[in-house]
Length: 89
Image 1 (cartoon, rainbow, N blue to C red):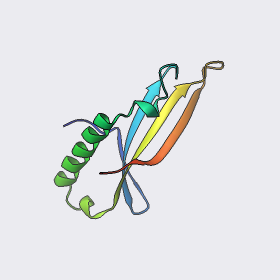
Image 2: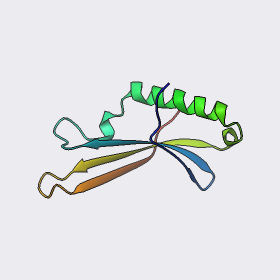
Image 3: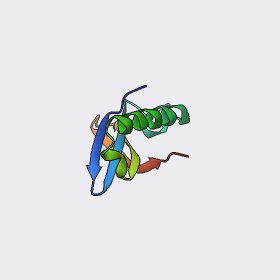
Image 4: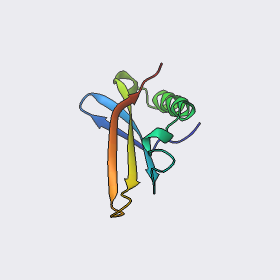
């Protein structure tokens, strides 16, 4: 199916999190690399996870994306966290 980087609970939500890293945003930001195809794969994997854990299937779910990029001057990591980055549609 695929992999999900993190599965966490935020209050009443079950959150599936994709973490992306880029050394540079020259070809696009880290969060922009989560394509529609990748989103579909994450959704299918989350559905499989929920089938294996039916007690958690009662919770509302969301998909977050965390992007990590190195600052071009300082080389320090910069973080972008998109909550509810995409949905099941």
